[in-house]
Amino acid sequence: MTASFAPSSREPQPLRFAYWVPNVSGGLVVSTIEQRTDWSFEYNRTLARLAEDNGFDYALTQVRYMASYGAAYQHESTAFSLGLLLATERLKVISAIHPGLWHPGVLAKWIATADHLSGGRAAINVVSGWFKDEFTKLGEPWLEHAERYRRAEEFIRYVRELWTSEHAELSGDFYRLHDFDLKPKPLAGPGRPHPEIFQGGNSTDARGMAGRVSDWYFANGNTPEGIAEQIHDVNDVAAVHGRVGAVRFGVNGFMVARDTEAEAREVLREIVDKADREAVEGFGSAVTQAGRSTADGKGMWADSDFSDMVQYNDGFRTGLIGTPEQVAERLLTYKRLGVDLMLLGFLHYHEEVEYFGREVLPIVREMEAAELERVG
Ligand SMILES: Cc1cc2nc3c(=O)[nH]c(=O)nc-3n(C[C@H](O)[C@H](O)[C@H](O)COP(=O)(O)O)c2cc1C
Image 1 (spheres, rainbow, N blue to C red):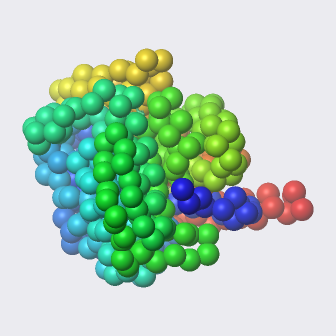
Image 2 (cartoon, rainbow, N blue to C red):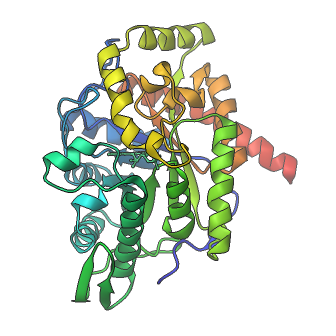
């Protein structure tokens, strides 16, 4: 099996930024607060261009096949990502995909083509799935948690093999490929042997899979302590598998940066006060199929409370709420723990992505420069 990212590429790097693509309706918080965010392609094309001009390296397109927890309308992730790739010049666009619904050969082929069309900017986020109805209504079996991860891991191994080796003869518990050679391969470059492979999920199964096979581990929003524990666990597994330094870390955070702290806190209060109770509580029961159903109860949403769940992925817990200085300081706290990428969501995307680029990012870069100087 081909190695993934070379540990030698891990010199001190600036903190990178990604944003959640609002490709499903209803915005990023399940609340009736005004959200000047739209799920249309036109809105998203403008957003992607604004994002690459305001310090974002990545966009993450979500996958959702049917409504739940708001999100009455959903655009498919790989097609939407390709649209964004073609509308931008530098932004890397990550498509979320479900192993249970894609064949690894078909997906590897799809992304290889998208990679050629975009000059090497395609990436995937492998999501093992939390939404049982989505599978059963599509007529696909719903595996239990550990099995979903075994399948996701086989999927990642096979996709990487198809992207990097000349001949694939693969026979696993979930997928088979016979005498298959993917041509053309995706574009390879220094430090990027193939499109980057992200994964989402925080359970012990997820941590193990990241340590063994993924290039990136995405965490739900969490406190610095919660993130430090996950980084530690993933790195422990990676070390056992000869992958020291090979896994990078991304953390979700919902950002409310305003000129004053009081303003930012007031926005957060209003989001939670105006939460769509029924949808949030409905979601709480759906995710028993995800985090809470794991043997050790360590999965996503295992200890989320009502206000955490008003943001799909526990984004308030990361605490990116306050003035540009406060938010920048908080971002640096995560970077010092070993976080490489912050995955951000916003209430009013266009306006706030520009505010981020103008007010927050310069402070982050100044702090990074000062820190580099201090350590020599
Ligand atoms: C950053 C991030 C993005 C995710 N995106 C999606 C998505 O687009 N669609 C989806 O069905 N699940 C998504 N998930 C959910 C996970 O794939 C997984 O089902 C969930 O985290 C439960 O896994 P766990 O029990 O290992 O925590 C995402 C998770 C994270 C952390």
